[in-house]
Length: 331
Ligand code: UT7
Image 1 (cartoon, rainbow, N blue to C red):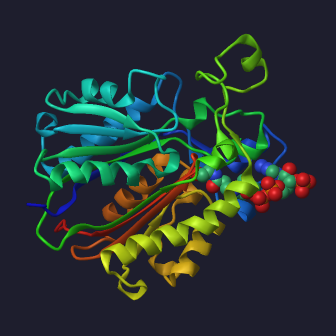
Image 2 (image 1 turned 45 degrees about the horizontal axis):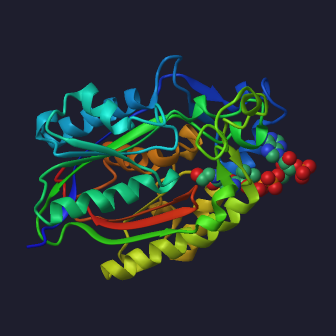
């Protein structure tokens, strides 16, 4: 029998260090005015030296487990989405498994850039819906600050570090994940990438000198793509769920740019009062942005049992992912 699957615990972790737009004005030729006007970002969190993605992921995971009132041994599977993993391999998920002591869990990374968390929810939920597993931990985690070119104003002002985690488990019928939409367009792979360090362009002194081990992005191309797919993916997930715009209580979009978020909300006919936005305080935390926004909104008491949530992301790949969720937690 196919079971209903939802989020039974969530948590997030962001580094303490705040870097403001004024701080960035001292590093690159930019201004607080430009960054706020074009992106909505005012500050971001940056991990300390020696703090890697798995560390933030483990902190978020332990909070999500406490929220779900589960222990690490209860987890059957860990899925980590990250564009900034600790290493090429082993997976960051395996490092998280060791850090939190989830000794009964399988573990793997899922690579869909900023869309990874929703991709991960869709994969993890299937394992529970079919009765194979009981509890799956899905994590979006990034320490992008360590793979960003701090001399490139086109990218360094945009990104931040952080992690968000969700425990997926069986929930009451009618609650949990109601609709999913996943998509990709690999022909746009070169619009947002880290060119070197893999097998296509192995790391060398030359690639390092050319800054090819850092994030490169064609901003306007990604912007056009994002405004096209965000609304479309959310609509497909809503159709899959049988949910209309006026039934949406909260839209929780990937936090890349307020202009992109506003355009998606408009397309979906969801007023901005029903949209969770925290890009001003955290910047773009890629795969972590949706679970951080969700966890923060829940902690602020905004999300109530029975609320209909639409989660939607887009990112490198190019990829996109939408999900409709009926919130099942009491508090
Ligand atoms: O998670 C997915 C990842 N990425 C995204 O979602 C990003 C999507 N793209 C965007 O959000 C926007 O394209 C950006 C915020 C990145 C850029 O905004 P834009 O309105 O598309 O600006 P632009 O790239 O067309 O650049 C406009 C001008 C250029 O100067 P010129 O050529 O007109 O003289 C840029 O060189 O702004 C300049 N510029 C900057 N100026 C000050 C670019 N970055 C900066 C900066 N500070 N940080």
